[in-house]
Image 1 (cartoon, rainbow, N blue to C red):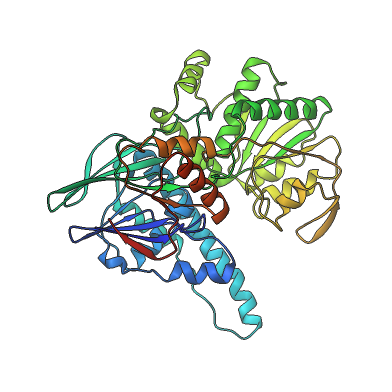
Image 2: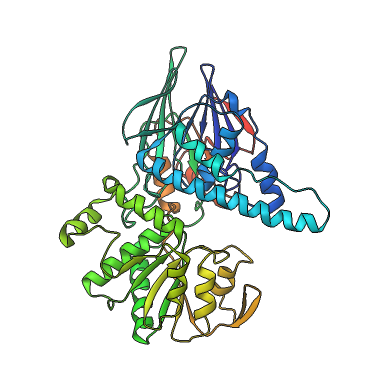
Length: 464
């Protein structure tokens, strides 16, 4: 039995791990690598294996760094099943089509520059049509439902608590009479996050592939983030302003909507209109409402008490058309606008910032980590002059940053997660993390007596 680490190895993105056993090849995730444009294109285009020889894919969740290269895999010859939870199947279908649109748009943008330089055009990694072909390969599964991923390999999804439908995967393997359990964590979520159930700890694993994104620091309590967000909304509305929130379309947007629903139902903030202005976020929210079976008990109680879905309330509007989006900037009353992208680099959020950033009554609320050189990072650093669509603006709006909303487990839970299998596990492989957090986490596990902890290099493999 061999595991090859072909993505999210000594980095965070592009999750792909290849299990070879009993003559079969099972791919755990098939994500897009995200980094410098030139490296990203080449790395995602060139598979480190023959897609036609992959027998099955087991997908942990729908985030693009875990699912985003599935259209390219299918395009290049993969013909097997893709196993995922029911919610992941629905969410991934929407996200992959959106990703196909982005691939086409990015290629068109690059080709305009290449044409001016007399260079040949590039092809998009895949198209919307390619993304649509993935749907026929999906095999939806319930949590805790055993299924045969390949001969001698029985798999089962366990709640990961990261995003809607996210799962860890337990693989019980019988190889020539030798029985072992391999546990793949996917992305580990957090306890007490809104909407979702808490992550399930691993059970009796012999080997574990485990994420390490925040292995170097614990997170603040989500309840603190709730209170900070409540205060931002209250003081902004109190001075007659708008709260403008750049937010990722899947996960973060739905959490914020749920928070606002709770706040307005309880009277913690004034009742003002709330708008979700992102086509992908709107589609993703539709899928959230379709899958109440994955909600935690707090959300179920809230729905029962107030007799309406957690992601719908009278003051909430999901805008679908460009015309509806533009109309928001003509309105002057207090409101909350949640719009993509999460780092304020593309999409409708730019128009909302352009129209509202110079009004001191307004607040730009930053709710996630911002990459260097993005508009989101410049706003988070409170720069007074920013460019939007190439035009300079003086920032007079307040900027508020809300920590504690990450959907990834912090150091404390990661340590607890690994220690859950301390008595039986033979080796732990840390993936989905940069070197510093992974090494800090490894040190913590060694302190607890777990000495067989590894940080595999990209394209390395190990016999187990």
